[in-house]
Length: 221
Image (cartoon, rainbow, N blue to C red; front, side):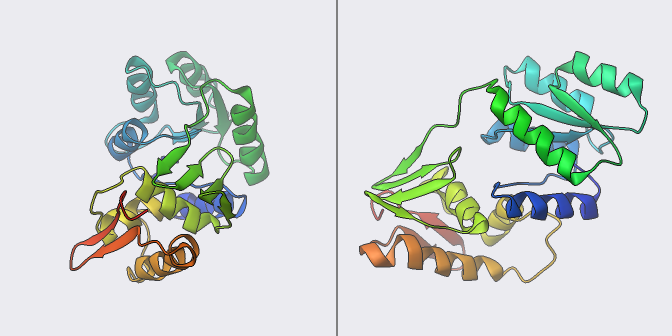
């Protein structure tokens, strides 16, 4: 979700996670464009009025670059011109503010069902396997149950195997830039994740790099 209203973005993110989605938030158009280009998402919820780059610019640049991730654009109330430009720019759907959260989720699910792009490939690191679309994880042949936040953290690590990721980087991608709690929450979730995907299987895939951050070791997994 690319939305500069921190309260709205945080509320929607929590709601989506409660529905079982892994969600990320960007607070401006430049960061939103970077994340959409760098990451692999099923749907992008994109506001129009954004600092840095507006939603129309972000949508147009993604389409010009060949990125056809479904985009649901948030428009102004009764903004017929906004709605028309959103569709002309390449958005797949639009929703006027203020919107119903129930309707937002229904629109997102409709875009997912439309199947306008290939489902994300299964991620594999050693014998650790993660299916982003089905929201399932296996260690070898054993399926592992994870909470939505644990799943999002593992997916982020698996998309960057071998890379050392700082707490700040993890917070920005797995939580969001608006997170104002204790950054040690990352340590807590890493510990919980190890107890589920490493320790029961005699693995040590999630490694701590002292004073730097964490990495998922392909050889340890």
